[in-house]
Every structure is written in C-alpha cells, then in structure tokens.
Amino acid sequence: MVKAEVPQGAASLVLAPGVTFLQEEEAVFEAMVQGWSAQMIGGRGLQRRSVAAVVSTVRRFQASTNEWPWRWSPQLFDEWMTDRVSTRALAPTTIRSYQYAVRSFCAYLCSEHYGWVAQCEGRFGEPPSQICHEENTAQHLQGYEGRPGRRPLSRDELQKLFDRADAEVAARLDAGRKGAVIAYRDATLLKVVYAWGLRANEAAHLDVTDFYRNPHAAQFGDYGVLQVRFGKASRGGAPKRRSVVSLFDWAVEAVVDYITHVRPLVVKSASSAASNALWLTERGTRLQARDVADRFGFYRDELGLDPDLSPHCLRHSYVTHLIEDGVDPRFVQEQAGHVYQSTTALYTAVSGDFKNKMLHDAIRAVLPTTPGGQRQ
Image (cartoon, rainbow, N blue to C red; front, side, top):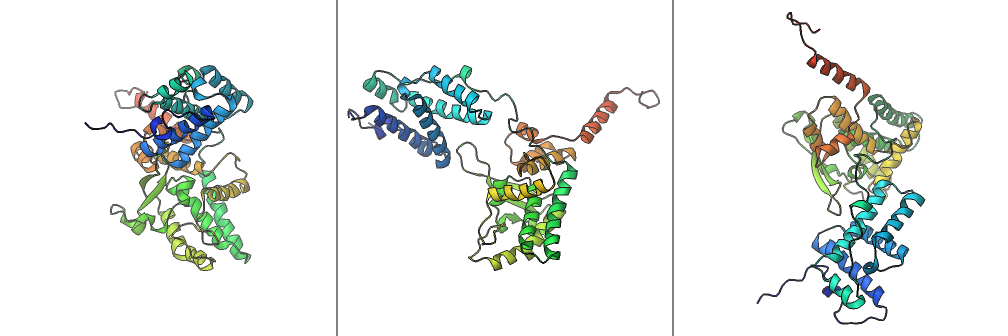
C-alpha cells in the first residue's frame, strides 16, 4: 500500500501530534505561521521576501486583536480594517494587500489538506474559519489607484528633461568641475529608461551584456534588442524576463557612446573591481533603483515639475507616445511586458492633440458623402 504524501505546510510536519504545550495557544499559532510559510515557499514556490511580507501582516493582525486564529471573526477583521482606513489613511493598494494576507492565511488554515481544523477542534474546541469575504474586502474597481499627479510626461517636458541632463554634463565640463562622468551616466540612464520603457529596478539591474543584435534591425548593430532580466514578478514569483526591441536610433547612439567612452572612465576611477553592471557608482558598485529615483528627482525638481512624478512616468511616457504614433497596441504590450492589454491601456494617457486627431478621423469616417464624393 502506497503511503499518501504529506503536503508542505501540513500541521503534522510542524506540530507534534498529541503533545500539550505549556503555552499552547502561542505554540500552535507559531506552528501555523511556520507551516504556512513552508506551504508558500516549498509548495507554491513564492519568494521569501513576499512570504515575509504577508506573514508580517498576519502577525500584526493577531497582535492588534489579541486573539488567536481559531477565534477570529469577521467583526474583528472589520474593526481592524476600519482603523487602517479611517485612522491611518492607508492607500487602497496597501489595504488590499493586508486583506489578501489575512484571507490567504485563513484559507490555508481551513483547507482540508493541512489538518489545522482537526488540530484546533481537538485542542481548543473551535475550528478556524474564513473571516474575509466579498462584503468586507476592497474590490479593485479602478484601473489606476496611484497618485493622480503621476502621469506621462508630455513630449515637450521629456525633451526639457533630456536637455537639462545634457546641460549638466556640459556645465561641469566647461567649469572643470568633478562629476561630469557621473552626470553623463545620469543623462544616458534617463534616456534608456524612456527609450526601452523600463521600470527603475529593471534599469538598475542592467548589465553591459544585456544588449543583443536584432537581425531585423541591422542599423542598430549589437544593440537591436535589450534583454530585461529583472522584470516585475507576479505575486511572490521570480523576476520575469522579456526582450525589448530597440526603436530609437538616438537612444542607441547614446548607449554606445556611454559604454564605449564614459563607462570605462568610471571603471578606471573605481576604488574596487567593477562589476558587469551598466550603471556604476563612483566606487564601482551597481546603481540601485532608489538611485535612479534620486537622479530623476533632481532634474524633475530643477525643472519645477510636479513632485509626484517618479521615474515610472518615463515608462508611462514610452507607452503613451508609441500609441500616439500609431504603433500596434499588441506590440506595445509585448514591449512593456504586460500580460494583459488592459494593463497597457492603463499606462496610456494620450495628449489633447492626439485626441483631436482621433476626433477628426472619427467624424470623417461617419459623415455621409455627396454624389460627387465630397463630405457634407
């Protein structure tokens, strides 16, 4: 007879059966958390950082209510959510992440596969239950819930951003000041983030070897395709990879010049052995996502742009401008690495001029024509 396999996270793997603990309630709760973590990491293959985040939320809920999972109720959950929404004014996305964590934990405890219902009934006479339901959890009703000030840059704003970054390089060179090389790095970085539609973290993790030849775009040489290795992961999953086709000759020229003439100067002046990173600090270490945000923020503030704007607005601008230029939305979706076209649509905020063009095209399409071929 084949023995049934015990799933990762089963109560029998983290809690000795029949053993009574001195502080039983606390011991069982810790075993639950340990089992849930094992189920998410070993069974579902989620990243440890993501697991740590949802476990932390569950612990905060338990500490706030001062009740154990087998005594949790929808009322306790509602009171906790009310405090987070009204008193602490947390963002909708944060609220939803809290609800996801508690709901997932309750689903794990109530599942017949892990044995926690029997453990709780045997030890405390009360089984756990699902306390999150459709009526007391936030629904994702809006496509975008971020700060309203975060938007794509207009083409004029984008050009001013690039011009300001280039001017910083020229000013440092003319004045003989230090930092011209780093300023050149920043100017190229901003152009790459826009020209390949990257997130800040994706840009920070680029290596010099992430560019490849595209046989269908020989004019770009060895820089026809950019391999993004640290794309945004699905919830708890590993980073996603995608290939982004190069589209702008001016951006390719900027990258080639930076890699050929500027980056070697950073490597030469670094106090330690430089990595293969595309963007290096003066010490030869890899630039981080927060550094990308800092450099963008410096030039944003210099131009007096909305302080809510972040480097991500360059990615929004990339998607928007391609759509305005008539590029196939499916191609734009692939370039941006979006699973769903509806996500790409959320990034698109076309300009007034583009909307007017669409309006005129629509009018010409529906107006009847006279026998002579003229529209009425």
